Length: 231
Image 1: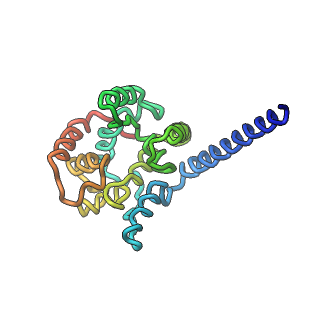
Image 2 (image 1 turned 30 degrees about the vertical axis):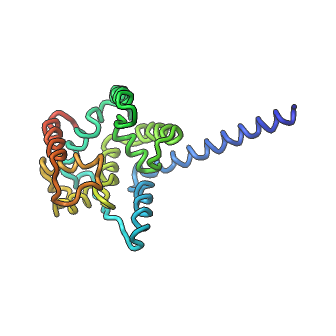
Image 3 (image 1 turned 135 degrees about the vertical axis):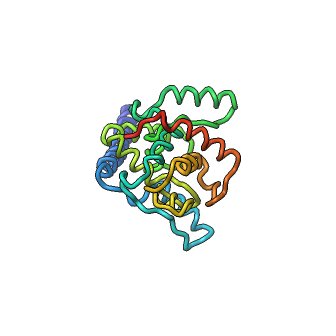
């Protein structure tokens, strides 16, 4: 019995040590990226692997630009669409999470997540798209790290540079050029609202393609843009 107990204790301690090492790895990356731009994210890697299953020569469209080179209209549109309380919370919008939970319960399946920009960024930088308790737990831990180490300006800068805006199109600069033939700095309010409306289903939209849903969603975002603040 004592032997079994000792081995159990050792196994638990080893598991805890392994967990701490993993969290330290995440923490060091978050700290490094507070002042250095990530070349790619876990989600970018996943998308490129998927694309190369059908086209071995596929490449991502991505070009990093500084925060100052992104249209203020696009910044406002993204915050209005994805996280209106971005400047007020510490990474989690508990009211939005509660509303998403109630909506999912009513529908009987997951239709809304209530994730903030910080949570979405944590997932895109490090994690898979799987809806598992482990992934959501790790996402929450990384979100706390990001909010503790980065400024809101840095969070939004990285987010705007790494999210997907088309099949293999990542970041505001690539998105602006792909959809409108313009640099990210030149996007106007209407274009910004349309780009923000694409974020939940980015691969659905090709340049010039419009739908009644996209028009409706973009109109709602435009109406909200003046109500939000950005860093």
